[in-house]
Image 1 (spheres, rainbow, N blue to C red):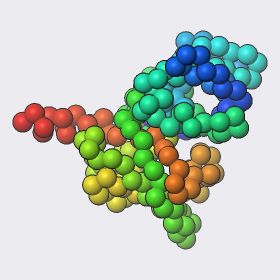
Image 2 (cartoon, rainbow, N blue to C red):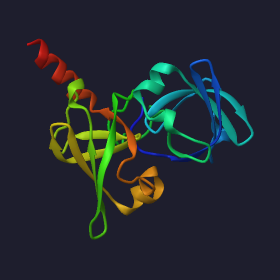
Image 3 (cartoon, rainbow, N blue to C red):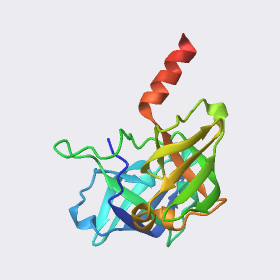
Length: 195
C-alpha cells in the first residue's frame, strides 16, 4: 500500500533481460535502508527488491508488468519516482495507492501557468477507467488531483515543489506515463456496470 507521495528519485544504472523478465538496477539515496523482499513503487509500479549491492538495488519486472506500464521504455540514466510502502503509524498524506498500474497514458500538453504547470494526458477509455473532477489520480506514482475530467482525457496542475522533486521536471508532450485510477472510483464503476 502506498500514498503517492514521492520520497525521492532513483537512477537506472543497469538493465538486464532474462527471458521475458527485465531486471532494473537502481541507485537511490535510501538504498541502505532497504531490504531484500521489500515492496517499492517505481513510477507507480510496485516491484520487489531482489538484490542490494552498495548504493544500488535490483528489482524484476515480468512481462505482464512491462505490457501494462511504461517501464519497458526505461534506459540506463532514466530517473524514476520512488516511494516505499506506507508506514502503518504515519500520516496518510496522499490517497490509497496500490502500486498496480491500470494502463498508460500519453502527455498531450504542458502549459506553464504563473507559478504552476498544467499537464494534460490522453488515455484509452475503452478499458473502462474514469477520472472525476477533483478526484484522485496517480501519474507515474504521484498522487494528484484531477482538474479537468473528460472521456479519455484529464489534466492535473503541478506546483513547483512537485515538479522539482519528481520526474514531472523532465516530462514533455508525447511522453508515456503510468496511471493508477482511484481505487474507490474503480469499485463504483464496476458496481454500476453490474447493476
